Each structure stands twice: as C-alpha cells, then as structure tokens.
Length: 231
Ligand code: MN
Image 1 (cartoon, rainbow, N blue to C red):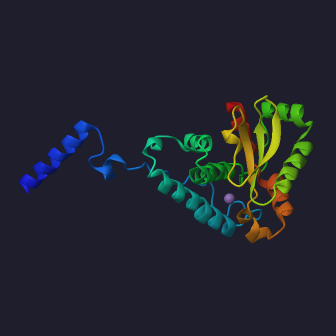
Image 2 (image 1 turned 180 degrees about the horizontal axis):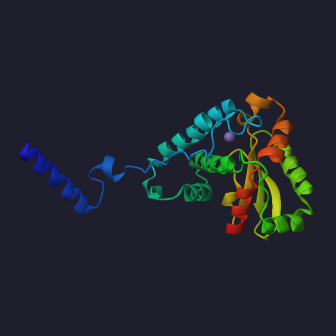
Image 3 (image 1 turned 180 degrees about the vertical axis):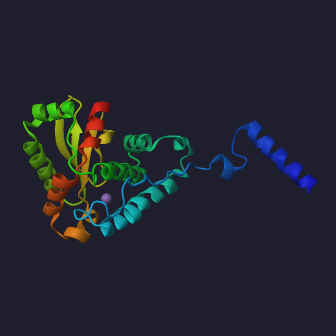
C-alpha cells in the first residue's frame, strides 16, 4: 500500500514536472460545457410555444448539439479554455464544419431562448427605439421585415435583428447553423429559430403563424435593448 502510493505520487510529480501528457485522461480532460438554464419554465411561453415543444427543443435538440460539441472538443485540447462564442468563431474561421455546426447551434439556441420571454409588454429602450426609427421608420416596418426574413429562409435556419457593422439596424436570415455573430462588427439583437423542430408540434406547416405569434406576443425587447447597449 505504502509503496504503491509512493509510486503513484512519484508518477504524478514526474508528469507534472514534464508538464506534458504522461497521463492523458488528466492532461486532456476537456472542460465540459453545460446547458444554459432556460430562465423560465418549459410551459411559460404557452400558448405561443407549448411545453411539449420546449421539452423536445431544449431538452433533446439543444442538448444534442451540446453533447456533440463536447465530444468533438475532447480531440481538440487547444480549445479547452475558450468560451462557447470563441469556439464558434474559431470553428467558423477554420471552416471546421462539424465543430462549427454544433457549437453555433448551441450559441444560437442560447440566444433564442433569451430572445423570448413570458414577461408581457417588454419594449425597446429609448436608444434602441431611436435606432429602430432611424433604420426602419417605425416598429411595424421592422416587425414586418423580420417576419419576411423568417418566411424567406428556405428550409432550416434563423431570422435575426442585428446591429450592422455600419451601426444601422437590419433584419437578416442565416441557413442551418450559420450565425451573424461570426461577422466582424455585427451584433445580434434578437433571433427566431425557423427550423421545423421549433414549431412543427404546435403549428405543423404553418410557419407564418408561429412567427406572427413570437413577434407579437413573446419577443424579449429587454434582451434586445441590453444587447444594443453593449454593442
Ligand atoms: Mn432549434
């Protein structure tokens, strides 16, 4: 017992002194990223989005992307200490699409859950409201343009309200996992997930009804305002 313990401590000391991987399971123990808390009950966005949809969307789809990302990161110790945002940026720059698709989907979903709120009547801050007036004219024009982007995204993807590199607000859309957070100088303010898994249980093929309900009833203007102030 005594001998084997001394032997073990000696081994650890030796690997520490070398500072390298004599003991791969310790040296390369990748930091596991964890699922962001939802911030509200799974049924809190009803009737716009059912608890059943969020149960699958957050508990299965989002978690699946997170688990895939953690598994891929085990083979990439250089990325161990990076934030989720930095991993997403890095994977996009390297066009490491397996890692990008999963990391970006984790980032996008974190952003999506915060883009919606059960709190009624959130409104843009004064400065965000001024920017909306400058860029779109009024809220109704922004709302309709956002809706159009969500409808024009063919197949899976995302619709976004962003502050562009020129400082003006814009609505845009991205396919699959792609995300404006990888674009230099662009700050996402809000997003709507338009993958079918986001709405099919509640709305089947009626994406327009899902987008209308999100835009008009649960969009989180407190979150948009906070993102705008940080930009
Ligand atoms: Mn989704």
